[in-house]
Length: 332
Image (cartoon, rainbow, N blue to C red; front, side, top):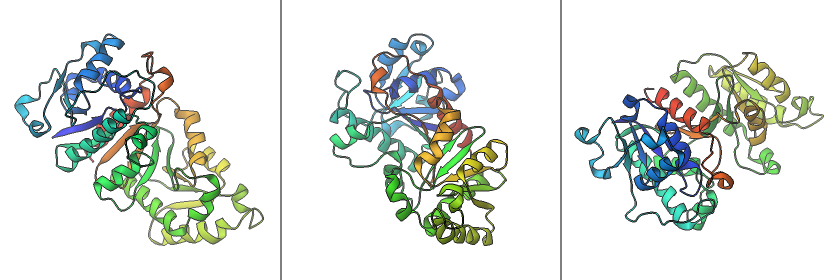
């Protein structure tokens, strides 16, 4: 069994580059416990463009049906599993293509299948292009929804992980105008329970801080009633079940308290409420972490960066952190 499966992302973006750069920083022992789902030829070309030490990596393609044969897992090479029957076409980087959307979609799908079949413990995903997926006929908002479907998971959560700040989003990619209608007591309880169970598995103790929706937590109804009508009843119910949930706390107070050690993790109610403060601290090396799946899944916390994909100057800090976190958590 491999400790980590990596999907190399959209070939036209920086996914292959940050994957190769992150691999180049692993020691030989860890390299032998990683399998990349992608195309070996493409990864070799990227490594050559980057130069040493990435250019010193050796990539060896292995058929998916032989992926568990121990004698064919050389310690001095990165194993690459390619689910595609045809080679990637030599298209210019930096653009959306249906053929690359199909490729990156299948890399993720194959990665999940390897793990679900018992060949890997954790998945780290390099950035994909949602538009390329759509061009290829795969209409998912992103990785999370596909992973939920492939794994048969009932509930999933999107979390962002940094050393000083860990934030789960109660709602994800929604227009701000839709957040109040989507945010229910049931949804909040489910997301907080996902976070609580995950922290408990990792042995992380402490309170979970939950953000308010409105300024000043609604100011007793003056600025909105969601705190009294939805959030407070949900948190009261969670505390009765033994979940150390605190809130709703105005977001401007909550994040300050968290950075001073008050909480083990936070729950933000909408995308930018959580991501703005998180990325102020971890713009380059934050990690996207999926909760609720039957395996660990991490991801680089950025997109395909088409504007620089031909320059080979990408910062691999986030992918490196995603790989390190997945390896660290894979035993749990």
